[in-house]
Length: 178
Length: 137
Image 1: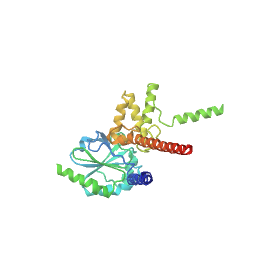
Image 2 (image 1 turned 180 degrees about the vertical axis):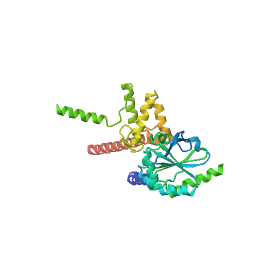
Image 3 (image 1 turned 120 degrees about the vertical axis):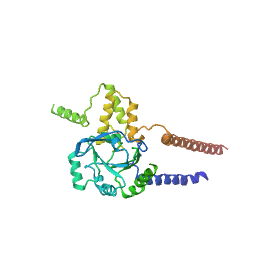
Image 4 (image 1 turned 90 degrees about the vertical axis):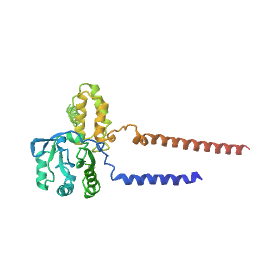
């Protein structure tokens, strides 16, 4: 009896496994960041276009902000640009850029052409701060709370859905705590 | 002779395809090669750091080389990367709660296979034995 049912059981088990695989396939390349829930890494970076002024992680404490990792060579950054712009214009959160592994001139040209949604952009031309943030693909966005804790990371393009479902609720939760 | 020179040039350019690194000793170089082969490049996720040409892999190789020059241990370097990129950078994942399945499933499958083979063979032997007896009687 069992031996007759065995092929069906194996078939069903395989079916469930594959269905599960298909379900997670879309998110397979997104690796959960070990930095969630931790203090953002320390840095001191010049501002894009104002290389003489340095901004450190300590300077950014006190208010939550979205750190958007972007570069002029990154096509998906161009794609998410209107969404980032809308978010910045809505004023719900400070939007700060991290210009990652870029050429300063190219980056400034990119902002001139498409508009600059950022309060300012930190210039991480070498990508060293990117390593500390565990950046491996631009665009990435980190939501950092007023205490400097990374509460959420979006890998890939920012979308209105992510803002609605992930960013806004966390901002509201954060403002209640204060 | 010309052929020989050509081969030399080709070999040299292959060796220079990656950024030249200076090591203190052949042991250190061997350690570097072993370590970068066991770490995953996060950009092209099916390649290791040693093989990948992605800009991030180049940065990380430089970083690892720098840490080795500064006398830091493999454990320290691995912790540095895991703290930033997670366990996924390890091609040889650590054995802990969420990776237990990864380590145990191959053994379990081998066990199931072994048991299946055992019972199949035993069943067949018994059948054969029974047939032989019938033949004799």
